[in-house]
Length: 377
Ligand SMILES: *Cc1c(COP(=O)(O)O)cnc(C)c1O
Image (cartoon, helix red, strand yellow):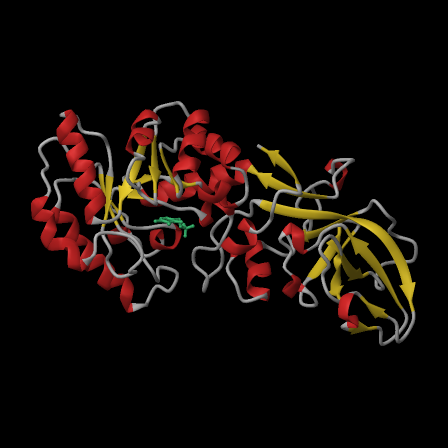
């Protein structure tokens, strides 16, 4: 661990694994506590949809619960049911996608809180509560500009038809489209609209911000914030240094090493032709592991033994393997079975994303389930 370039001790690598993702649960906890302290007295929730952005919903949610998190967000009903079965403790699980007709009983049985996204859902849920003379918790989302989810401008007039006798929404919410660009005019516009809209329903708690919104200032915090990517080490302030701790390390094994001559090519399509004699190593990670084809030849890997020497990816990435240039490593210094790091201290999820013009969310959620996932706490 003393090695400043490498995230983990390579001796920890599982004997059988082709490739591993190491997930630092204590870094997730510290990220959570940092965000919680930043927004206090507002509360900090945790977004664990899509298997906690590919890092494992069960492990991540348990760690967040331990850190004090009591508001969890997932996208699908199925995700919520799975989460409720492991988080039976007192906490709120919100379903971002709301419900479709005939799912209501499943929400109530599993104590899941739908986010009501259109007027029809609002009417049905209110009827259900009034019929049973019981308030079943539900949140109400307003569309403040993203045109994706939430009660729209065209539906506002129908709010007057809703009966609030037994139905009291537990949260008014909306979602920002441009929070990662602090001076985008949409931020202020959405904030102003949200302040107007949330007053239209009998509800005293509100939530507007995900990870990036937290960094737009107190006005954007309301009562509850909903970070996802920042918990997992993604940079919520893309134009400034990352305030979050890295969570993910990705490592593969060397399967073979070989020497090639001037004019030899590497990989499908023969896209790389050696300009001089070179040494290359084949690693056990490919695009089926979410290591996108477009990452080669742009990225560099590292060996834990020589972390200061970059090992550029060469040629096309195959489904299960990729090749790196190990010419600059000392003679006979590596062999099959050795560990090579692709994401870690010297190359973060944000660096990988930037390389191919995408966002860290896509890098994490693409990782797939062939890796051995190792959790440290
Ligand atoms: C996914 C999602 C979040 C979390 O977003 P991050 O940018 O990952 O923090 C919060 N709120 C809603 C409505 C979402 O869909």
